[in-house]
Length: 168
Image (cartoon, rainbow, N blue to C red; front, top):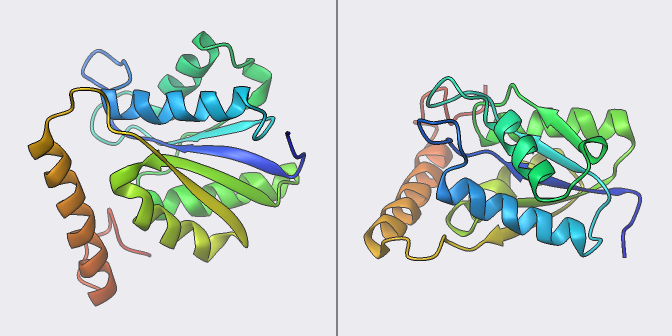
């Protein structure tokens, strides 16, 4: 049941040293492709710059989606955002330009709260859908990522973050 005013948004995550989606990014992309194929939306925005290495996350993401059967004409690439705040701001611009009113944002389960906070500031109608952790992802790494998110949110609320995470 695809609604023409809804678009899927997939948030980037660093790719591996070979330019392939990392397990966390692949989980996000798989969830987005699943939703796309179920008809949740007819178009996808992949968003993310080259943050941790030379590979532009959104370009890698688009290629992955195409390999999974999503036509390239159904993918918009946003390649400048370096953090969740920028993802939300730049996606808002694409949505306005293309006429979309609602977003289904796909991110990792540990990142859902931060994504919800940033995207809700920019968009009136947003739903954040969590992708599961990759199979066999170590429990300690799961806990570290979740703890990092809570620390980021607390520091953000206190205004103590550097430019990578803060609103500028």
